[in-house]
Structures are given as C-alpha cells and as structure tokens.
Length: 253
Image (tube, rainbow, N blue to C red; front, side):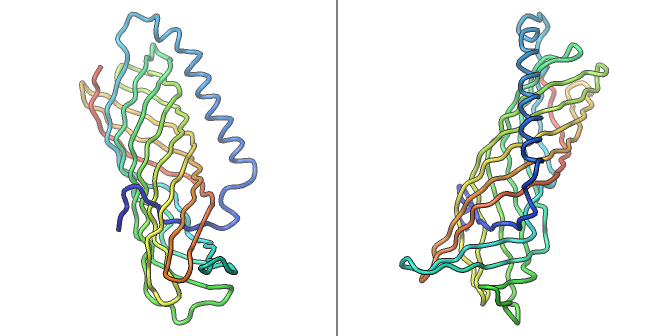
C-alpha cells in the first residue's frame, strides 16, 4: 500500500459532523488564536527566556465506524451507493510536536506537530445499491493519515513544574484508505484532508523531563477516490469526535 501521501476514503453517516458544533469549534479555535496574539506583546517584551518543549505522543483519534461510498461506472455512467460498517472507530495516533511561548504565569503558546494515524478496520456489513452482501467476504480496510498541524493558544503555569495548555489546532495532510467490493477485493484510494480542533493539556516538568496528556475535540474534512477496472469510487465527507494522547518529551528551557 502506498500510504505516504495517500488516503483511503470512505464517508460517514449523516450523524457525524453537523449541527452547531462545527461553528462552536471554529469560534473556540479563533478565540484561542486571538488570546495568544493579545498576549504576544508581553511575550516579546519579557526579558525571560521563552518556554520550549519537544514532545513525542501516542493516543487514539476518532474515525468513522460507518462509511458511505459513491460508486460510478467507467466511462461516465450511472452511480450507486455502497455502505460499509466497520468495527474500529478510533485510530492509533503518533505525534512529534514542538510547543513554545512564555508563561509568567499566563501567556501565549505557539507550535507545530507531525501526526501519523493508522488502524485496520474489520468490515462487519457491506451493501451495494441498497442490497446487503451475503455472505459477507472477509475484509479489513487499512486507514492511514499523515499530516501537520499548527498550534496557537495560551498556557498557565500553576507552579514551577506544572502547567496547563489550551490550544487551537488547524492542519492538513494526506490519507490512505482501502475501498472494497462485494467479493472482498480491495484497492487503494488516495486523497487529502484538513482538520480543525481545540485541545486542553496538563504537563509536569522535572528538570528536562516532561510528561503529560491532552484531550482534543477535532473535525476532519476529507476527500478521496480510487479507480477500479470498470468503475471508480469517491467520497467527500466529514468526521468529528474526541481523542486523547499521552506525551513525553524534553524541556529545552
């Protein structure tokens, strides 16, 4: 599977994303960005050295448990829906991040991170054009993403070795996910995604060692497609949910 720079796309059910939550998410993320910018003046004028951490993290991030795929015939012909249900609804998440700023005791934080998500999703139901596939052939869809996030928000040092963070997140990346047909054959899809989110974290620092964790609400917008011999599959959808991560790192200063 050529997962670097690819995405396996599958859509989700209408219940994932919608309502006022996306608008609230954008409002909170924008507020954190404004707060970090408002604190920037103190950051640049303060004579103390800024705070900088490098962190490695592992956690779980939400992904769809139901997929709606649009299947089209080649050349241009009629399209029909395919619905897939899978067991796993969270992916493993590995992250490398750098966060810096100034907290004395409250101040702006900025940063960036690389994130790789992966999971193998076992298919438990498959219907094509409204007709269930029976018996269901064994199939597992590989779901992988790799991308980067920009972070901006505020931090609050409650003591010399413990602080809290509230960050807005915006990012973009590539995705790789398998499509499958009615007989269990799979093919790679490719595409891209962009995400927005808000997160809160708590971190302990002992000398140069940093240990902590975060909880994040994220919204993922993605599109992907794949070509078969006689048709193509396409998806353009949204997923949202709550994820978390444990982190360990090095406190530079």
